[in-house]
Length: 258
Image (cartoon, rainbow, N blue to C red; front, side, top):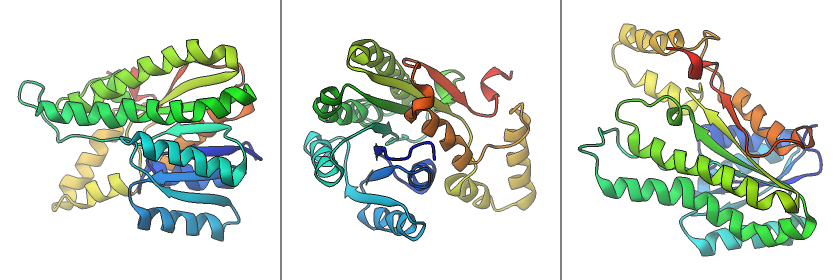
């Protein structure tokens, strides 16, 4: 198991990628601190981890709150004694809109969650991680920072800031043995995307929409969120011990397609 014995905090444990990462990390041997705003959903994910023989704790968290982030770190340390990794996956995606007409308050909210939320969690955990002179931080980003899509500017700009934060932290924390990397996700097949396709009333139009996405991906399939999560485990693990400041594209190669 690639994460055997490690303690990992994962934010943004929602019905898509966050859930896949949390369950998969536990199956890979990690003790997982699950963080999200929905207490009931966290309980559901934790129950599945328990049924599969994994270990975890659920901590309702709003990453825009410094107090919440500090509480996550304290409860994780009180329960498991250390923090080996952090996965910053919490995000806010504003309504799709062109930049010229977008609500600028949505930019503030996206930046507060997608970038500052990650920094709050990292800063809360740094004393414990520095004391051990080890650790791995993985920031979950998006293909949209490389390949802009109409209407997704506010979300992508905030994630682009997270990318710069990744590189900056890699430089600042390297001397303490703490690595910081990012994974750029594209289209992922999971509960949220299935709901989107299922919500298109015309079945032929829904199939056409899905095929349109697939046509832009060199691997000719929409990657499953659970498969994309494996790259995050790699970055958390000792197999990536010589990597920091890196950005790995986990999108079926869409980032190189026209």
